[in-house]
Length: 180
Image (tube, rainbow, N blue to C red; front, side, top):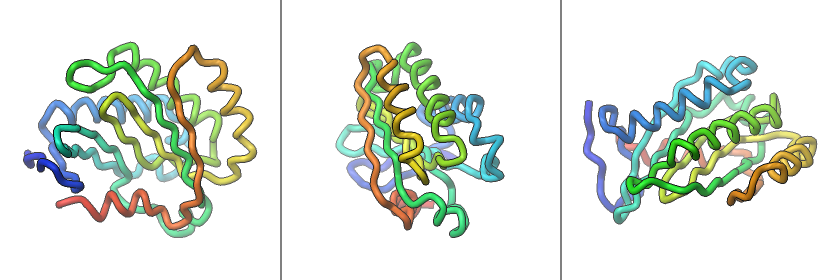
């Protein structure tokens, strides 16, 4: 099934045959290949959606859970941690091979640092940046380790933010915007 990408909208459309989908699938495989969360959570076997959006010529790939986790799980992870990594992109706005390797290391480090206190839910890639969203609990127990890890990296642009989001609105908003 190949669904055309809509121009200049905020809705997402699935494209399961295009190169964007294949690159996103590659990223997703890399994440799970290096992720400790896959083994720790039963939800490691959960489903994912790989979406593409084209808004005014700016392409974005979004990987998101295909459904909200059970309410008892969402209650345990009331905050969203967003880590945005800016990369050097190719002309097609995707990261270079070197940047893909750097991204793998970053995902692995986040999974290791957050452990059972982090629940990976969304990534957004486009226009020279990738944002990884984890729902978290007890973040104060991990903030020093995250700071130490980020300080150990060579100079790269990384932004970290944390906010309360007990209803998991970021996932819900994406899922509600999908044309299925």
